[in-house]
Image (cartoon, rainbow over all chains, first blue to last red):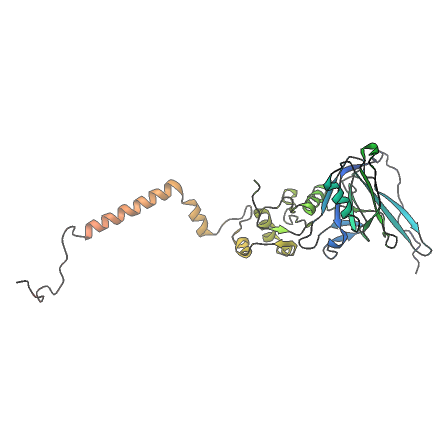
Length: 190
Length: 124
């Protein structure tokens, strides 16, 4: 089977403006096992519906603008290639709640939906989901009393050694930005 | 205080208005109200599977829910039309008519005697 063909070209520059770097202050975190994979839908690597199992909900991690910088790298295999997703989370408040949160991530497997500053033409790339296929694990965590740059805890969520992602972070977009944000609000409400 | 809603969607579920695709009628757990939930359940019964909590009498509520622009049944709309002053006047008119009829047919203060009055034993 020939998997080596591409099917479309690309205009790789925008004549009107450059893309905006950076992220917003919110990251939506969902436990990987809470996602109902039957009712949640992905069309051409765009997530068009996220529905969680009954009684489950998502959580929001609110931090400083641009302190979350999601990244993805190609992992070149002998036969197939995958993607490695990384989302660093920085905590700026030394509280008991923060400690509890950090500890809760130790064994967790989550999907992180990151808010980009770049929205695209209609908001179609404002939100991207990292770890949708296999989930993200807590890969590193650093805590020092020096608190350089006011960072108390510095964590990195990333793809596990054995389970990588099949694509770049998937866009989350449901017909319009308003609809997408209403859905995201519904993930964390209850 | 936020009014409690009887309906709860699965987290992340988004109901869209399939009639007019009106963004104001988008519904998730972030903005759900009883009316919004009933609107979607009435216009799109298939969305019921996206709810995790529904009131026991949900079918009754859906039946009774009136969609925007939808007319009520004739009897109900007549009931709605007769309100306030008109209702008072109508009641007053009915009661006056009843009293007049009663006055015309009843001998006030007189006791009606039984038909077999002559056969009854008389007091000594």
